[in-house]
Length: 277
Length: 324
Image: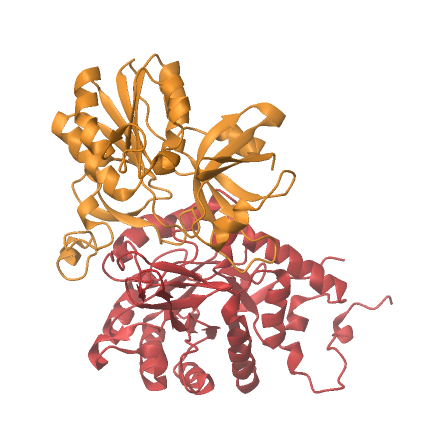
């Protein structure tokens, strides 16, 4: 581990991990073991990668907030400590072939994963605009960097402490219309992704969302992080957000049914089993 | 000198005693990006059901001290997709595969076994008995020796003679030895233990159960002493029956503990969520541990903790080649 810094209400850790940095694509995440060698916390914490740099053979930075004993332990790590990371994991964001205009929407520290996306988009000649939101000013992650990178940056806070008072979905239709956006990329809490997807569907433009589901392994073996997603064949399946995601086409995710097994999902109790075979 | 790590599940020879626990390796391909599956003794599949299953709603997992609770609900593609895609994939790579099966009735287990009979690449069948019996008001098969025996006898009768049938036992019973004995009498070639004991945790912020399914199976090192006790009791009562030991194995030392209690195969489960390389690491640690204690063969250590006090360790010097 290289450096640790506080960014507003969040912690950012930079780790020397050449193997992960080398294969990294925007949208990838890492699984971090917490508690040290004799830990009683067995599940890995999943964090999306905020930044990858070529220094020291390759470094990876991720952002998190303290939510429990695992992240509290992580927040206490100092330079030169060793961390156990697995990655890069998940399916990255698909990027457009043509130089189009993209709106990047981040809620809380979900915006962390959008900066590598913005980088990749700009390298392809895309125009990038940011919409970042959170409850309060100190919870908006990366506003400064967004202002530097994006053609425009719109901030929203629910308490009005910075930017517009309200939610990202309140300002998103205006931004999409103003910049004539061709695509939307979003990462943040599930209710926000649902709202962003609804707006994008309204404008009939593609929307890619990176979901944040609770995971245990991050590698596809534990079957913990499932959510109902409609496949190419129109059938809803309970898919793992760690290997089939975390990036999905927004309109394919059944946000209203997250946390349930929809009756028409493949293999659902009762009705769904008629899809057998 | 390298330790001879070969072991037998019934008459099926495994190159080493490490396997994955049912439901902890998904379809197998997920782990193959981390290590060559051919290097572990066997891979145990998730429990295969007749129809595809979507499983339980989320949240499905809650971390607990030195373990976790899970209520996945046997999410899986169903036997057709399993035979079409997952099993051939494993077979092509020469992975010894223990297929776990789960059902709601004796007939469903039997039908599953019949489907597996002609499928190439099935090294053994593990019968997940911790399923509610639809025909008996949802009472779990594994809690009742007679119900377990009925399933095992039926599966054994349709399964090919050269494919061992393994009964997976639950620790949530009054007397695990009597259930084990009933399964062996019904024709089980081997036993595996333990399945997850049932647990529960409550989110004190939301003041509701942490899991959508309310209760879930507890796994991880928290249950290892329970596993050691079950393996010990069953091996003491039925010393000739091969036992697959599992429950919170994180290190080679943990695997060795189960082997000393009487397991000849050790399954790694929750450890795979923490460390995708766990199987090979545990195998290496176990081999080093055996070598350090002067063992030439893994088989010599199986059940060794049962030797009477004062007895020497059971080194089979009589089998070694003499210098003459």
